[in-house]
Length: 277
Image (cartoon, rainbow, N blue to C red; front, side, top):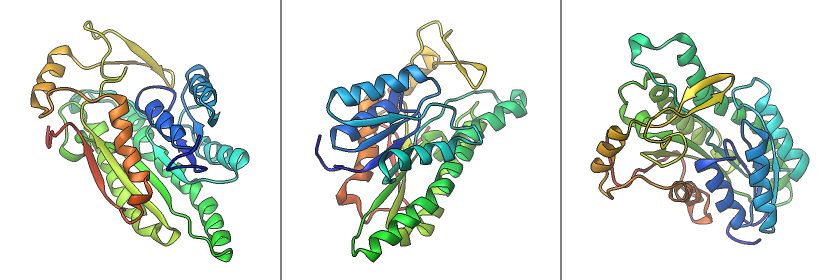
């Protein structure tokens, strides 16, 4: 495989399914070497095999991004397998909703852990590796531009009823993005954010009875959006429909193009034209 990301080492959390999978496949099609992550081994290995079947390179790093040791394992996998880190996409996440008077401390901390603490730990672990690579590149007279793309949400920009924990986590990733754009500019790393609207994945489209659940970190979390709410949301979207994972991946890819070398500290809404919720 060869393309605009030829030879780049890309780490995508939550890439065994949904948007993350589409991001990983998009990157691989453009020549990137992937580290694939999922909570479960089976979907992660399936994406690895898909990429290899297409002639690309990929390895898996299975586990919860919320685990205290995960960040070091993820960065360590990239260094061990590919001797570098070029692109980090903090994509993994889920929702666990309640109105504030019914939201437990466990709900609050679980969602902040996956959407904010995990990206913080991953980027903290990556900094010494990137700094060392940049130093060696400078001594060799080479200039390499690297990327971080964090995933936010319309809920993080505008709030959303029943999602205090998720909205705060996604708003927080905006602050982390802007801060690291300033800290890491000297390392030739651009740090940007994509804020999604309604994207059709297993986490949002779980059947008409809204009864599907996923076991996440030992908790059974209800999946899906109420069909009536989905219909109302789609009526608010100027394009008239929810987005696909492939379309969602395209927004992340835009920030990773060579043409985006001078774009940093920005948030791109991928929402079908919807500008508020």
